[in-house]
Structures are given as C-alpha cells and as structure tokens.
Length: 181
Image (tube, rainbow, N blue to C red; front, side, top):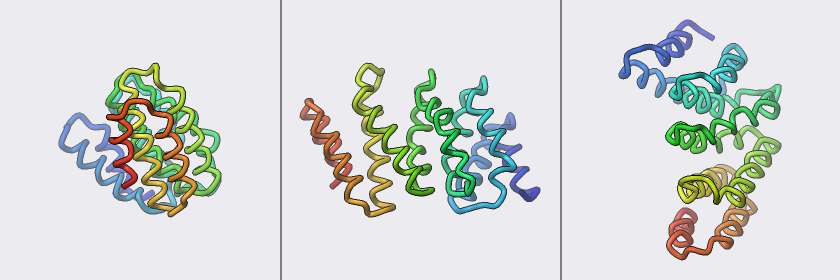
C-alpha cells in the first residue's frame, strides 16, 4: 500500500467531516478495482466492524465489501458473517449502508456470490420482524439486481422474482417488481 492510500485511510477517520467524506469517496473509487494491498488493511477493517463509532463500522463494512474482489485467499468466506452482522447494526443508517454494499462481495467469485445470495434470501424470508423490513427487502432486491446486471445470470433474477411472489402487499409487490423492469 502506498503512502497516498494510507493517508486516505487516516483521513477517513479524521475529525473533519468534509475531509472524512472525501477520503471515503476516494477509497471506494480506488477499491472498485482490484488492489494488491487489501491484506495490509484487512484485519483492521474486520476489527472496525465492531468499532464504537457507527461511522467507522459503516465505512469498514463498505471497504471490506469492495475489497472482496482483491481477496485471492478468500478470507471473505471466513469473515463474511462479521460483515453481515453490521447489516443488523443498532443504527439503521449504518445497517442500511452496509447492506447496500454487500452485493459487491458477490462479484468476487462463484462461492462468494452463492453465499451472499443465500444470506440475502434468508433475510428476505425471515426478516419480517425487523423494523423497516420493507426497506431492507428493497435493498436486498436491489443487491440482487446489481448481481444480475453484473453476471447476467437469469437464476439470480428468478430467485428475486420468487421472493417477490411471497410478498402479500400489492403496493410493495409493485415497488419490488420495478427493480427488475
């Protein structure tokens, strides 16, 4: 990892809000592509998933999701449950930002894709007790759409449509179907 990237990670934890946000954006942009330094920061990010500051938890989750494509050792297969836990964060905005980025883990390879889809399907089916579960379901379906668009895999679309078929409220059926138009 070069010093520029290290500085961006340091800035993403700094006290200045504008500087933090700019660094966050820069890190997400950089990690949209494969990088060769993922393991230099990996353990710290996993640790930050339980940081006392919800912003740190959110950023760590999003960075890790992006870094899944830079994980030839497939550490994500072991660490995914820790990352997934942040999608249940007590701060809904943290949970939601984490959930909205989780699909990026799925583009790292077939085992990761299958794991992410399995977790999301279970959450969709069993998450109706959660507060804001309709938004969570929306995010899950949008994640599936993102994976479908990436892989052009009809089975992903069919899984999403099968989930939508289980929804009873017509308003949400229409909203969810709009994701796959």
